[in-house]
Length: 221
Image (cartoon, rainbow, N blue to C red):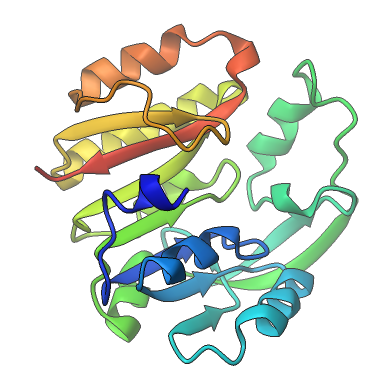
């Protein structure tokens, strides 16, 4: 993980961890010497982040969801698997019909604040890198960004390729020219070279359903 993120993060950089969950990526960014804004809407996980990083002056915890506009949003909570809480009804519907996802159930709900990447930048400054992992809300999060960050990643799933394609298109509209990807938790880029938006979209479309998920990386250069 440190080797992968070390491609994009240098000591002293500011990083946004959008969907920080319990902070494994926060730990990697801190080991790389970055300052981190950890964004997590789930109240229980916000408390966990506070216990782990609350005394670290280089970690700021923002208890909010991220989307295309400010307000509040109904967060659907998976009590048995809190890493896949989502603000997307479409994500829940897609999971209900997908092999391997049938046992997942979103039985809880929390009304949480939602803000934008632009607003976070206004509060904390422009990051060198942003990791976005928001369970089917990635394109929505990117529509709240009007000025491109030097590099970012966003999660994709094979049960919602349309969301990932919309996120790729949004990145291209923001000026991102080069893309690669990592599958699952491999922490390794698949291609080892930068692809155009159309090429990474074709790669995504050709993935077998068993690939399940991963992250697409986008850089401006």
